[in-house]
Image (cartoon, rainbow, N blue to C red; front, side, top):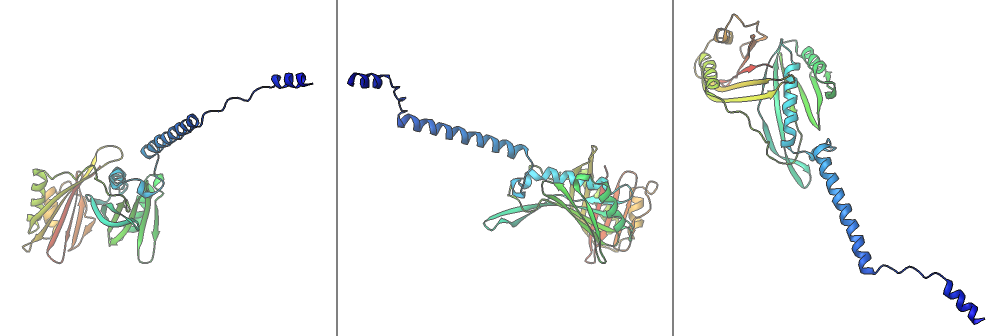
Length: 290
């Protein structure tokens, strides 16, 4: 009987040897490290290539190309029957991304001049001409006419009529992490300063500052604005009497805005606008269209 038990016992399979605890721990640590590395690579690729799901995934520097592109789209959408100017980069700090995190906003303006009663129709045309992805919409109210659009990645287009015949549209990033823009506004050249000085001197003023702003056009090329800021020191002449001869009356079309405070017209090659403030301030822009 004992022999049978011994034989049966000897025929049973022995359990597999257990992995030593130290070796098993190293194996688990290796898996965790590899998994963390894979997640890190996926996160990096996603941040670099995927569109953001929240605004603070992109800094103002990373959003700047979208702002520039939207400015160019608006310049084209305004059409050949309007006068416009574009602004440079306006960076404002002090906004809050979260209660514990501050940031900056980046904005650029597109100012469009049209007939005194044509601003609502102009907004409709701009909304229709913008890319469909912008989902542009216009609201016509009793007191205000406004346009809203989405240029992508939380870059917004907002604005409307601010005065008879004047529309201002602002392209903005919203509050984002602080970072370098990666590009700066171009410096004015000698020819820019000469043109700016001619405009203000002819209007009876003196030149204080010249700035240049540019944006890429959708089909290629660049829309470019030379802005001259100064003050009127003399009586000057009516804006029309000064500006049309200054830039060639043969090519100038009819004025879109012609008042004591504002004058805007366009020729085949450029668009000119002047605003004369009550405090003797003079602001003139010369814009080369797309």
